[in-house]
Length: 160
Image 1 (spheres, rainbow, N blue to C red):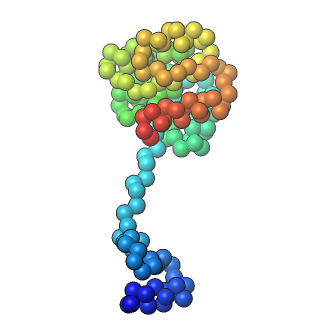
Image 2 (image 1 turned 180 degrees about the vertical axis):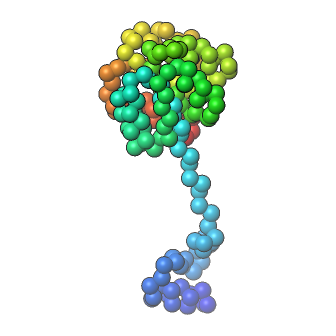
Image 3 (image 1 turned 135 degrees about the vertical axis):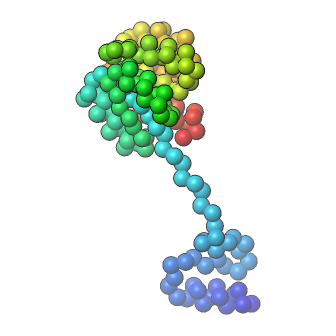
């Protein structure tokens, strides 16, 4: 009976704290544990075209990714080995170390970070078949929605 009076009293006046009806076994809001926010996936984008890098960075950030960009294969392998990357978006034709050399270095080092190839090189799918971490190839010029859809597929696969 005291619960009913407390409930009726609470609903008759404005309150910032929701009040549970009698018999509701949920703990008060202050005691309920909220789910942990999911960490945004970290993406490394490696391409030697600065305009394309900027475009991909903006697109991916707008869709909830934390983005790092690099312009050479050497910078990419340094970033991959130095920090945690959830996904790598990789061009094949880059200076100092091309994408295929980078994939080989990742394989040799036992790094299985998922890679999405974005390239103008039309034979990229055939050239990257031996690398199990390559999750797809998108040819330049590409449709933005295609890139985002592939990224979201990879994101689901890795649980981010």
